[in-house]
Length: 330
Ligand SMILES: C[S@@+](CC[C@H](N)C(=O)[O-])C[C@H]1O[C@@H](n2cnc3c(N)ncnc32)[C@H](O)[C@@H]1O
Image (cartoon, rainbow, N blue to C red; front, side, top):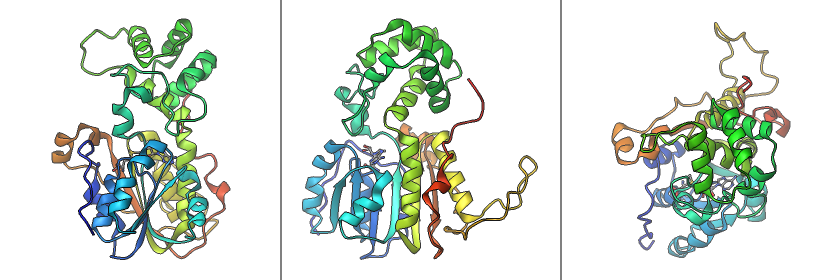
């Protein structure tokens, strides 16, 4: 294979740990469900895998064509949502795979381009749509009522002052720019200029998760991965905040029959209604200190992985209700 083109903009988080978790044997077929700038895909190709990679962002797919060309037939790129990755693969004539990886969230490419509207640091249109279709952040923020906005900020951003921020947003409408929204949030939270942590971080994250339906997608993607993986196949998921990680942890705990004894805080659950579809998950993996120092984005990353058993996949309804939302009210 010719040398794969590198992407200097991108330092993929936990790349080596992902390749280890997938335990790639040359010639196997693996899925990169979140292609982005192709950092994981490059590493998977270099380890000898054939790869099908997916992204909902048409820019990521277009910019990945150079990698497809260099891969000598070992990489296919598909445009779509990983929540329906099994359907997308069926269209490629694939019904079973050896491994699948998810790197949840926004890409550095999306964050760096102000015109995509994900960044509170760079002014741009208030957009935040990964797939570049559907309702934009501006459209939603300008129509939603205050309680709905507060609820999203609290549940998806852990914003403890969600009501105060939502009130300020509603008072400032109509909003059309990320810069405007960031100023409204900073003022609402009485943020002194130049203070180290920008208080708009949590609200921007929450709005992005809502606009892209990211938690529903994660639930659907995990269930689709369960249907696609062969017995002995491997699932690996990198997430960047506690809400997503809770969904992954609960999914793997449920599907592996783990935690069967309960704990001091939680009674023992009823016996598994269905056979475990995953072996006991590996311990969660966090980036090394060296990686955190090199790449600040890695600081909040968590990798969870598990091996598929031979049991049939559970019906889709099994994941309903695993929204990751905390039960506290705001
Ligand atoms: C964190 S980046 C992935 C970076 C990638 N691992 C790399 O090394 O370059 C996440 C990517 O997943 C895509 N994405 C997020 N949610 C998706 C979904 N539900 N379906 C398909 N792609 C999605 C985003 O558009 C973004 O490009």
